[in-house]
Amino acid sequence: MKKGAETRERILDIAEAAVLAKGFAATSIEEIIAEAGITKSGFFYHFKDKNELAHEMVRRFIDSNERLFDDIFGRGRELADDPLQGFLVGLKLLAETLAEVQSRHPGCIVASVCYQERLFDREVVELTRRFTVGWTARFRGYLEEIAAVYPAHGVDLDDLAETLACMIDGGIILAKIMGDASRIERQVLNYRNFVRMVFSAEHAVAAPRLLAAE
Image 1 (tube, rainbow, N blue to C red):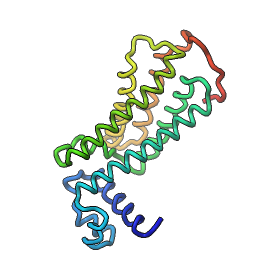
Image 2: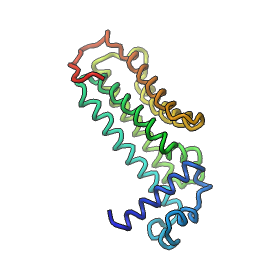
Image 3: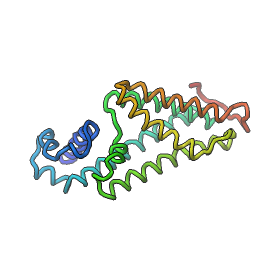
Image 4: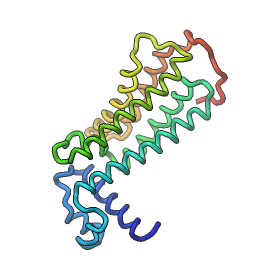
């Protein structure tokens, strides 16, 4: 990575940590500049203003999450032909990953934008909305694959997809309030147990071969 790109990433790292720790309004360009060890002109070389910094911070957070979900749920599907078992394995991996990340870097940039919406321009707010819609659509896609094999008993798939998003964000908040990173892991695992009950194996239309045990 070239020096200019490294400086840009460092600015984003510092800004993200500050926003998660105390909010966007309380994070100043001056403190970011001081911690990054650059001049004010150096900051404005990379970002024209604080709002552009926020936009790039959110975009980077979204890209990182998309790669994380691709990896985790992709690994789940590699371990099992059965879509239900693959999703359950993915949820287990997700729970463990979130607990580990939460212990090092608690918080959620998207939640920060949501709670402080008036501090951001319309483009940043819309970016977080599109991410949330895409996030739940991803989960809905996994659930549709499962429902093609196992009937969902009395549960709307859209609601079930949104529940996972709520479990993750709610778990992050709970973990931060309680000072216990394991809280988010337990919430995602509770969702995993609920999914297992919703798609009861005894009502399976078909039961593809499981390639690997959990």
